[in-house]
Length: 438
Image 1 (cartoon, helix red, strand yellow):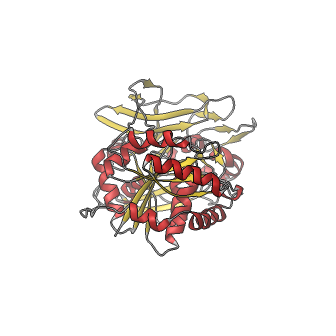
Image 2 (cartoon, one colour):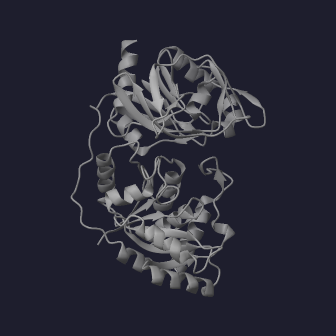
Image 3 (cartoon, helix red, strand yellow):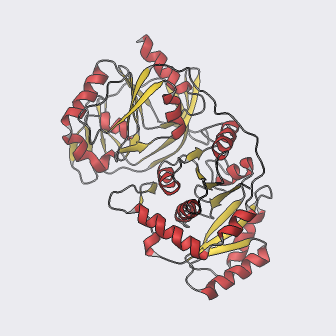
């Protein structure tokens, strides 16, 4: 019998990711095939999920994609799994606008039982009304169990179990406070750092969960109804394009479904602007987001790579760069310490990490007859900007217009918006059409 559940919490920083990673590894070590998912537009959690489980993690987002697409993806990737584990985003009911795009909306749509992670550091029996509210706020959502975090004594856990009994939620165990389970944070999500031993953190979390969480009971109360098999849709006619995609420590923010669309165009070749000497021969270049500001010196020192990308773009090669990719294609990048580094010098702009504020939120863009959606989050901003932009209108989740732009230089397109084109590929089709007609 298959099981599936969604890990959520009343708020961020409750330990959802640590618990999720520990469960993915602990269940995998039992010989189960575990399929991870992530609610929302996050890039970094899915990378950790994939490492912990051995299976690629799939984003489920009801703002950027239709509900039918989310259902198709969940059913498709869950088919071969013994257990499907979905990590929520923020608090259970937190969405782009009220519940829109929230973990609760995903759980309701896909009929996934919710397992809460509760930070119990400063609570005992007072957790009862909080649990009661989460369980009863929306009756359509099945809050099946709870795992407590930061519980150091058996007596503390006994108070928490009493609260669960009175509320009608099953206590499944707890994790003690443990510095070895702490994952450092950066920007809006978990940090990807060579200095952090993520394997050790995942293993320690898995061992702790195996000792103090009732995994058998967890699987028992989250048994899934049998689902009809679905076929994975084909997005675009197979072509013979050569697609070069940047992927390394500086450029890692990609949606798996976006890559599937690109793979339908032809052959993908991954390369590293940090470590390789030149970009591959390509018909289409994709420079995704990431943390170029952390590797600005190394990117700048790779003169041959910068030159090869500049030559490709100036010769009319089709390119799409988003966020960190946009920063790399600019003239210069200034880091938070005020150091300035030369970049690829394709786009007539420079970006900076100094004296900036966070830009965050979902985006819906209207570009002529095409509507496309995505997400924007960055701390960098333009220091100089002499770019030409295309006539798009962009709004946030509440319908308020934003100043998000889609820039174009020859056949190089760039934006601070991370676009989700995994449902139909129409955004990529439009880029291909424009470049072919130029």
